[in-house]
Length: 231
Length: 299
Ligand SMILES: Nc1ncnc2c1ncn2[C@@H]1O[C@H](COP(=O)(O)OP(=O)(O)OP(=O)(O)O)[C@@H](O)[C@H]1O
Ligand SMILES: [Mg+2]
Image (cartoon, rainbow over the protein chains, first blue to last red):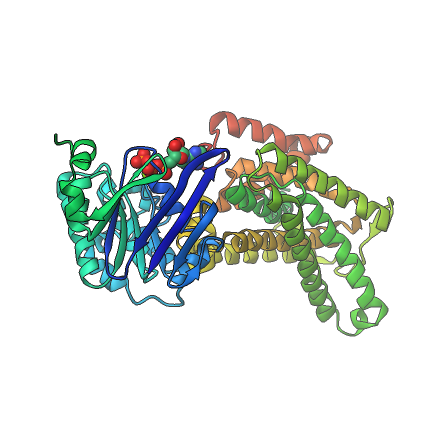
């Protein structure tokens, strides 16, 4: 479904991605782990067209999208929940969701996301900026689902959340996947993420240093040491 | 006397508010003070003279004045919107990611260019706007109200309500607010940011064109310099209300109009232009974000 080939992305003179290759097949959860500043967010931002890659290809369902505009990439079926959630703070919950379905004339998934996150229905008239961190994360995922994506990009959905909410978020990710959603997941919470994932990639300093099935990576000594806090 | 000043103040204030909206909407989205906005207002006034002159020449003004006026408004709005659209595309869009000073300088450049362009094309002498409403009117509560005043106040309020509904209720209006709050996120939900920015300039320029036309009808005289003073006043109104806030620009415009009109009649008309700025300083000392502005400067 998604294939990244030899991707190089820069911020000015700084090379954030130095030729990475990633593949995500239909129906998979693929997880991208790596330390701070490894280039995980940059990878997702490159897929969504926010960061322009300087070299390499991003192929989505047969189309090269590395030069496409972000809003057209959304229309092709990729939805991105960015790091830090980025809720529109002075739009209400329902308005945030409406913006999520901007590319559609009318939206029929509102009930679905309200079932997924009932708290959002209760708070639909509240300003996005006044939600708690956990509620904002749910809203961010819900908003991304409103465009009815084929591929969902999630950037650290568990960041800064209480364990209960983290559990809820991971359950939702699994549920979405079981219903057929393809997901590329970036996580610091490597263990939980790898358990959930079909396959995974380890990114370090803008390069893929390891790849394998979720299970292989969990049991890899280097991954254990660097990302799972085990020795 | 008192009621008279209310009417005069609302007339002036409605016009300020219409222009201020253009400043505040563009600032809300691009954090750019669009110095060229006052010139768009001036162009609206000139285009009004040109189109109405044309309709008079072909006899339409004589046979159907309402139609002639309506067409004049529509055409001026279309032309000014096209100017606003083009200015953004040529002078601001290429500098979207440049340091903040660059678009500001570009804006001043566009302003000077448009002023000189009109000066060269139309001359430095005042142009007379055809007297249509004349000075006819009626008396009410010891005040004399002209029809043109009624027209200006009514038009401004209808437009303000329409804009408010647009921004609050419609999908495009919500997208405009989303873009103002977070451009990257807006593009991640599939909003074409360039389109929304163009739309903002088109709407703001259209409102300025109407303001320019109405003022030309009110005072009857137009010169290439009117955009400068009106622009500064309207910008003051926008800051007064809280720059970036749409209701703020409306309130700021009305307050400014009233203060000027009361100041001119109760204190002295010599200092008419100074009241606006005195008020601005006082308000900003008390409430630095302006009357309805909530956000401190972000970033
Ligand atoms: N807007 C930017 N301008 C300049 N450099 C940037 C920018 N964003 C990221 N970088 C740099 O690019 C590199 C990769 O950053 P990126 O955000 O992709 O890392 P990450 O893997 O997501 O890290 P984290 O786990 O901390 O979120 C870092 O060295 C970072 O400093
Ligand atoms: Mg990151």
